[in-house]
Image (cartoon, rainbow, N blue to C red):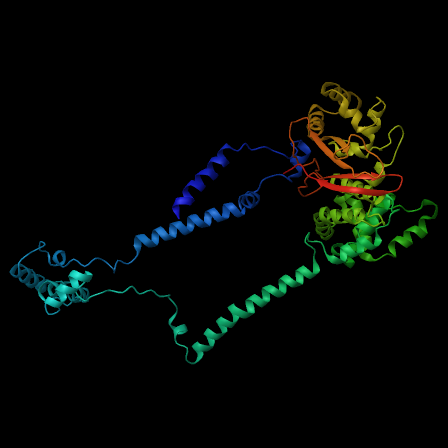
Length: 508
């Protein structure tokens, strides 16, 4: 066992020692204060608790137990040496053997020594050693089998409590109950739990009812602003309890996020009444998500804070399933829908970065709104207005500037401190720049003609200012770690068809 275990352990230790620890999470002061990436003792234990590490530790524990057992095992099956037991040299004469036997009898014979251990040693060793050297039959057995009693067998058994070995009366019932419990009830319980969960959830741990709801409510003309209405209908969200004690807090929250609820201002009273007539779970889910997008979560009560964290914890995988329902083949040609897919991507970005959906609307000289700026630390709507006066109207305009020019702009136009400017620089260096190179060709032919089978190859290149490839995005308002994911969609915006879709991840 030690033969493969020792070199494997050495290899693991060498890899761990030579592996360079690289921080792939944001190092700005805002992310540091959020405490999301702070390594507690529990996180360190969970990071260590991989299958390979735990298996290695268990193997070493088993190795230590075996070594201890072998070291302290009973040595009953020792080689029988009558000459050494009697204390004479090999080949001693009969007189010397008898003399040694009489001397040991004075010390160990039961009539001379009442100690039970002495009695046992005299019967098991001294008498048999004397018999093996003086009795012809015993001498023959000793020479053949190494023991005066002949061939010695090896007996093995399992240590069980005595009451289990007695199958009469109550002991037999206990044994029967144990066998039934371990062999029948336990496997059936595990099977029932597994089947109940597998019938309720998909392989991605999303409820089947959620998939049905997303598939039913997803429409080809669904506007990006309406994707939220479909997203909050997840069965996981509908199961979050709606308490009467939450009503007052939700009323206050409604006032704070009312501008984000797509209510018609021309008929505001009827719109508000219509909003509150929805299912209570839908009202609560949307208000909590809007509170996150507008960064108004400080007003939540402790019970709503727990529900809010549960909603955000479920959001990444629910959004992925919602995306799949948008790009799943629906048309007769087997194409998905582009417009709702874009809406899902925008909603996902807004939830991770805590950016209001209204901030993505075109304003002034920017077609993308001021929303992209809000993912930068210390940026607000007023800061965006200040730097727009310096003809920096899009996030790409800010990224294209040199670091010195950018720092000067932020300190002079937005009154940023040196530390705040440094935080912005850290986040901009972590932002990826994506370039896509697509090549279409027909195998065996130079050109492409109508009716040809075309092979399309796409090369995606990711670059960051800090040199990293995979990294966790700057998202201090999202309480959980979130990997970067990219969706590659080959689609026609005129026909609203998605021809090819592929999820890309650079972390691994």
